[in-house]
Length: 237
Figure 1 (cartoon, one colour):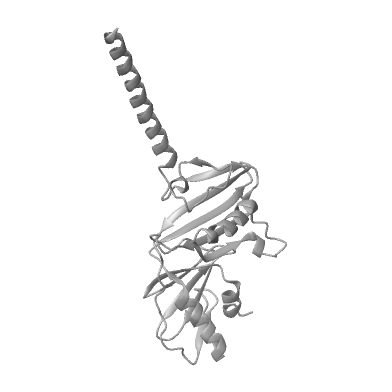
Figure 2 (figure 1 turned 120 degrees about the vertical axis):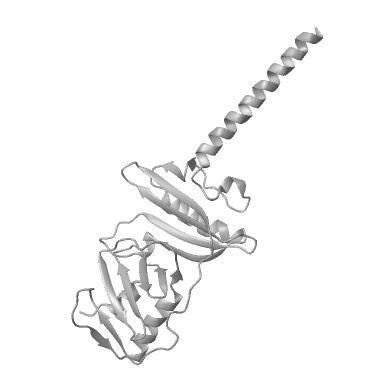
């Protein structure tokens, strides 16, 4: 009788060991492309219905607005401070039908920033949400002294530039450039390029619709959210 109990106990133990390793394997595959897993953090709630799939969470149907309002409301109560947030709800252009939001959050005891973004994939009829833990980006000052004038080329092939002498406009353009975040990313292709000549430094501006802007000069590369106000200062018609 004792022998049978021993054998039974060994079988049960092996079953649990195999089950545990199988669970670990499934878990590793499920979350292998994620830099952070919300389920492992008490202060990062997971919107009900989201399911993990390697590098993102998905949910059947169009729920990005619900998810946007959920995190905008819940995270501050858990100690998170909003660093940046934008959504298609802020875009009132009738031609733009984007279904997405992007946000960055900081917390005193959290290493880096928490990025949460979501969009509705119409082809798959599903909402896709990404959580990322990233390092905090820095902003290096490229332009120390605001010049009396700058010259703007509307394209890299333009032979002539438009000179701007309005001190207020130059200060605004300078502020946008200095406050843009440093990045080590390679510049992605953009449909449009302008060049701002500050005499001491030339800044290439790569932009396209709602995509983030890239700024490039001899001092490095910066990344900027798609600021319409910045473009309005630069585009001379």
